[in-house]
Amino acid sequence: MELLERFRNGDQRALARAITLVENDHPDRPLILADLHPLTGRAHVVGITGAPGVGKSTLVDQLATEARRRGKTVGVVAVDPSSPFSGGAVLGDRIRMERGASDRGVFIRSLSARGHAGGISAATGDVVSVLDAFGFDLVLVETVGAGQSEVEVMRLVHTTVVVTIPGLGDDVQAIKAGILEIGDLFVVNKADRDGADRTVMELEMMLDLGEGHGGARTGGTRAGVPGAAGRWDPRGHHGVSGVPAAGGAPEQPGTAPEQSETAPAHWRPPVLKSVAREGQGVAEVMDAVASHLTYLHNSGRWQVRQRQEAENKLRRLVADRLLATVLGPAEENGDLARLAAAVADREQDPFTAARHLLRRYWPGDDKPGPK
Amino acid sequence: MERKIRVLVAKPGLDGHDRGAKVVARAYRDAGFEVIYTGLFQRPEQIVQAAVQEDVDVVALSILSGAHNTLVPLVADGMKKEGLDDVLLLVGGIIPEDDATALKAAGVAGVFGPGADLDDIIEYTLSHVRRA
Image (cartoon, rainbow over all chains, first blue to last red; front, side, top):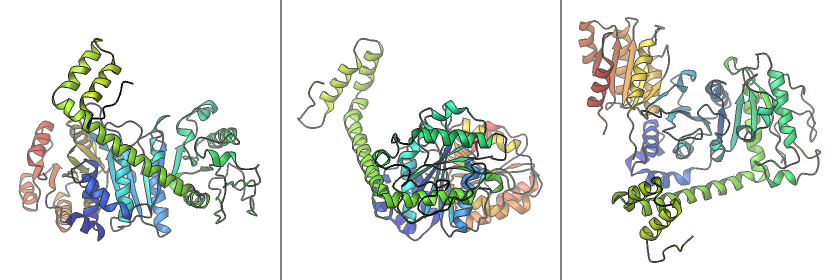
């Protein structure tokens, strides 16, 4: 495929077109993704999520700039919502991503959610893979302005950054399930506003409540850690493994987490402050992102994640294919619509209807039994 | 397969009035297009780069400053240089008739003045998008 050849030669137009084809579920999509698969698995994929207006785009822009300063190339995927009425969208994340046009080391792509709930679009994972294959060192995924349960992004990134601002909610908000559980690090942006320290404190307390329980995110590895001695605290106020407490106090914007090559067995999400518009605290967020990557590698979680992601991908592909095989013909000959109407009119229950569809359209002789 | 028409709505140059651009962006959205809105004060090379990265079908420039004779050819040439020959270039704003003729010679497909009807702009875009 000529497009893929240009892609491999670093042609950004080919990259842009490959993304379009994949996003549109073009017939060439499987071919493109299969071909690029060997090139993937190298980028550090970082999700940036949080409520609308907390400064995600500005932070992404600043992180990209900081990464460039450190010699890394950056791909950005920015998702904005689509209209539930027209299916159209106004994608405005680029407004806050001002940069010199001469820099080819940053590639920004705006995606519409295309009706997908969950903070990202259905194709976002594939788009990330394409950017990964192109060779970007860092891929930043900015979600739709997220509420409390847009947690899907964590499944396709290695590091999730949850951004909030002072005064968004009280300490009960902070212990609710959902978005606050998925953060590998937390950033209190617009920290020059009143109440920043309080927000940091509430987040810290929320995180401490989870200590020792084995949070959902790190699962078993957390429970196995003996006491606080082996814990790695990026803020440094427990002073782990000879790292001196670096200033410690939570009210200091940008307390730099120490980067360590030793393997932390435990990751306690740091809470950092930033004023992204001014670039304050951004280097520290980048440090923490890098530390998390080191943690993933050294703890073996990187590999676990890769396997998990591969399994998820396989499950999805098989499920999609099965769905198309079974429902495709039923959709075509009107069986699906007919049964749906019967269920809607309460003439039939949905379980019986589903069983009927499966029996009738299951490929091969080995029909699924009653269940 | 889902095919959405993608439009880059951009404001090159130094005028700070983006009401028109926003109205057009919204009209495109309501017609089911995906609009990438870049905001104010864009340099021509930024617009071209955004058009490349976003793989758009249409670039719609809004210019009220009177600098269209300078800015538009810069965008048009940049697009040609990047090989964006199949991308539809539209200009909206306060453009005198003579200038419109010159802009069209420079590669602009459609020029829309202050009184242009939004439906006409959508209709024009739909019927002139070049990419299959």
